[in-house]
Image (cartoon, rainbow, N blue to C red; front, side):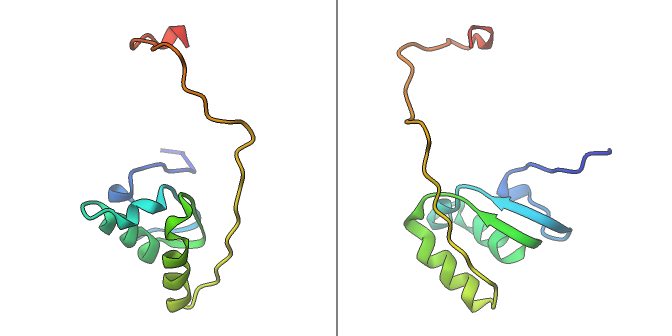
Length: 99
């Protein structure tokens, strides 16, 4: 009851609460024909003073256009992964203690 942060799926995001900062991850799924509505709802409806939108750059132009149409400021910042992603050679087989 005393938490100051909320994490949830886009479908469960509360667009009726005002917040200082919101992070909308996996924004490229806005183009998904089945779940894209949820990202659109959050992008347009989250009442955040500052909204950080993260994900694949394939929808950068779309997100910028939507931001400008709404009269919002827009700044694109590209981050580079410091380490390469690496697939492990063997599975944990569900044993998280082996992690």
